[in-house]
Length: 455
Image 1: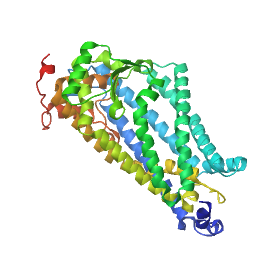
Image 2: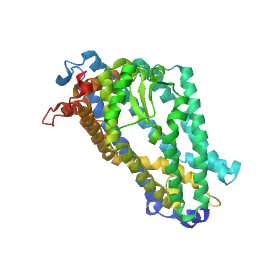
Image 3: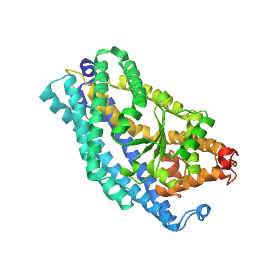
């Protein structure tokens, strides 16, 4: 790859001509414009969200006035605003850090320093990746600490101790090194040794790796961070098992996770793949919802499987990653890709790690503008899962469960519509519950009466 890069670069000519007449100058300009426009759009959307939520803070929406207290509504508003304001700081910091790594030369400096120390080769590239992750992680620690121990704690959500937080950080870092470095080393080796179609073989390896993670995560990885115990409530277990049988779904087990060790937030989810699927309830969820409401929440998750949303998301993820690897395969051989993003490539050896890092840094800047498309598909899936849940259980139980979860997680009932359209993977509460209740001209999702509903 060193020769390929050398063929594309003419540093003397670049100094003598207009910077933006060269491909490297065009990529610099395009990147800077995309980053600036994206940052402005993010700030504008977040500012709209803050103003909209603050404007509606003083009164519970009429549709929920009998179900939610003003105190809970105002807590959700304050929590949403606090998170949005922290998000503004995170966005500004992230943009500055990205500029520092790229156009301001941080990544190039780190790479050249390691080349001087270690020479060219696979070891240098792996150390470069490790150093990048370490430096970035250290720089982001203050914001992470503030979010956990200040913001979350001030609203009563944080339950973790500093010792547990550090232990989680160490575990996740070690897990990332043990699992991530071998796969990255293999991809780097393929980039150098597998010829022009290395990106296709690398994609196949990446796809297999992700499928493997889906299988081993429930039994090997998740238990390192949380305790999972079999569901002991016999009545609830019978209801849940009956629901799954009625929906034609089987799982390897029903488990309760000690989510309360770290947070007061509640949730439930399916995890695993194929025969390794598990149903997991947060202990905080079971403490807040009635048995029929748990049924309704589970039925919603079953709706995702019934409509094959999980498979569709996996397929779309693999399709997008194939396009990404193909694009990386082309960009990695273009000298302007490196110089246009502030990196002086190594002309005497491989630049594969640099190509990977630049691609991971830059692609989110451009893909941000198509994020609403994927958010829209996700919200559509949530509506379909809600409709399925209402057909299998009780619509009123699902509505009350969702309201409890919104209240428990301090999710605002009055988000800005444009912010929702751009960011929300789940519909806003008002739209979601209105769809279930047949309000505002939407079709009513009437529950089907069955033995479980009659109890």
